[in-house]
Image (cartoon, rainbow, N blue to C red; front, side, top):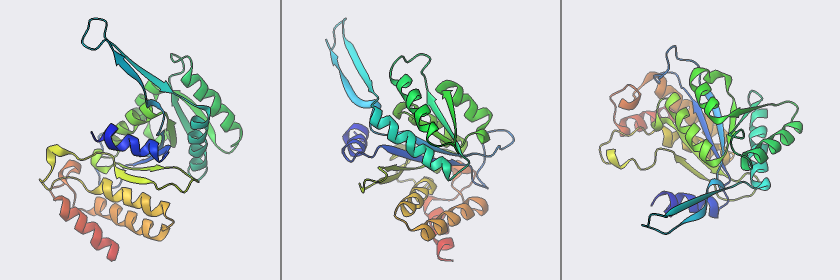
Length: 267
């Protein structure tokens, strides 16, 4: 209901082709990794095609010969724009783009993706391109997260990798996202990635940090950089000093954490 009935039609209908998800482990948030290695990655996920294009169908339903076909769609235009955007973001960070594919097994879509990545890398000599198979990248995110800067991936691979990244930054309650179409003037969408979390609805225990971080991304996209910085600073302060919700080692309620962030913004 919430995916094919709402979220994907919005992304595809508005052509919000880039899903941007920061993954930083903030001070005060407990790490799931021994030794607490630094985590500061930015994921750019293709958002409108790939494995979630919606192309396919089912036939012979209920019969022994029943078949389900799911078609991945990779267009030169779609792949070019999302990889180009990742390179632009990397130029303002540490200058490394890691492209996640599975082109050793996929014969067509991801081979095209790799070829386009090399073409774009040649246009950005100040940024280093890494081509990494997605399974190896998943392992590296856990074993050496500080080696990663900007990661660009297809719809499916980006979905999986960013959920791993959310765990590295403290859990799904910390994860924020922006679905954008840079340069188009199209209305973007900003949301915490945990969804509605119906299992804890009404209990007052949800972590509001992902929603607040999404508001940081929204303010930045609107050009309100001072407000974005103040809100992010308040969020970092609350993570460092408390209060925190129970999913990141505290005992505070949703509203107590939200109120604490609001007080630091006004201060």
